[in-house]
Amino acid sequence: MFDVQVNERGQITIPKELREKFNINPRDNVKIDIDKQDRLILYKKSFLDDLELI
Picture 1 (cartoon, rainbow, N blue to C red):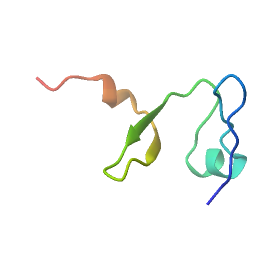
Picture 2 (picture 1 turned 90 degrees about the vertical axis):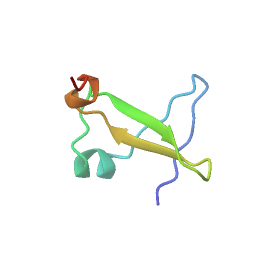
Picture 3 (picture 1 turned 180 degrees about the vertical axis):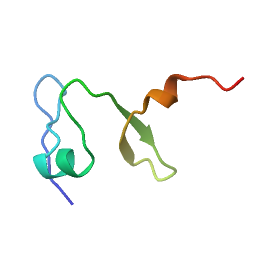
């Protein structure tokens, strides 16, 4: 588990170890979701997330 701090602008820094493990690079988009226990879930957004299934 990693401890991060929210700055005065509401931003957090994703630790380098996690950015490397999940291949998160500058300008990548991430999504934040909420689970049933009201916990935040952060995951890397895929270009497929924006495609609509026909």
